[in-house]
Length: 314
Image (cartoon, rainbow, N blue to C red; front, side, top):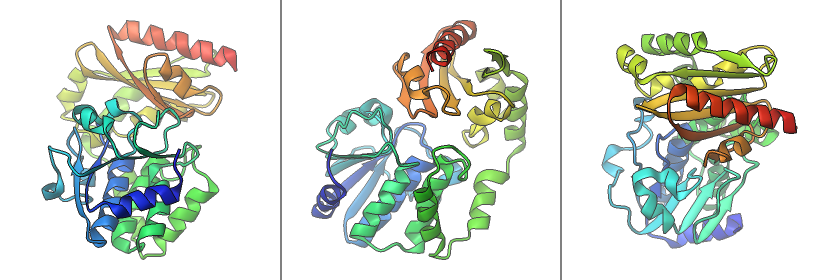
C-alpha cells in the first residue's frame, strides 16, 4: 500500500490522465472522479473520464460529456473501482492502472500505486485528502465531493459515517455550497416511477430468521412497465432495513432474464462483504453486492442459506 504522499506525487507528475469509474456509476465514483478531475484540470493537466455505463441525469452536471472517452490513455487512474472487473467494458484498461484510489476492503490493490482505505466512508473522503495536498478546495470542487460523500453515507445516516465524514462535510459546506438544495434534489424529490418501484419492493419483502433477515426483489418486466430509470431505482436496497428487527437484508434486481444484481445491507450483525464473497462479489461489512444467475427462487434460496449461515456464525 502506498502513502497519500506517494499518490499525490504520482498525480502531480502526470500531465495526461484518464479517470475510470465503475460500471453502474453511483454518486461516489462519479463525484470522486469529477472532484479529482477538476482539481487536476485547474493545475493544467489534461483530464478525461471513462465509464462503461451511462451517467445518470441526476449527476449529469458533474462531468462534461465532451470530457468522456472510449479510449483511455495517459496515466490511468481508477476511482472507487473495487476490482478491474468492476470497470465493465474498461476492465482491460483498469488492469493496467497506474493509480488505484478506493475504499473497498476487498480491493486487491491492482495498480502500480494504490491508496485503499476501507475505513473511509466514501472514496470522496480520500479524494478530499488528496485535494488538500495538491490543490485548492473551491466550491466548484466541493460540490462533486459532497455528492460523493453524502450519497455513499445515505445523507450521513448509514453506519459507515464517522466523525471524519462530518469533518469533511463541514469543510465542503464552508465553501458556500447550497446544501439544502443539493440534499433535496438527491434525497427528497422522487418521480412517480420511483414511488411505484418503492411500493413494489416494499410489497415483495419476505422476512426469515425470526424477523432478523429480509429478502425483496424487483423484476425487469415491472421496471420496464413503469418506465423506471436508474435514478428511480436508487436506494431501494435499504428499504428492508427500515423494518424493525431486520439486521440483514438482500435486494434482488433483475437486470436481464435470469440475472439478478444483489445489494446486501446489514447493521453489523453479519459481514455483508463475506456473504457476497461466496458469490464472487464483495464490498463492505455493512453494504456489499454480487450478481446471481438462475431463477428468482433459486437465487433467493441461495441468499437465504448464506445469510442464515452468517447470522449463525456471529
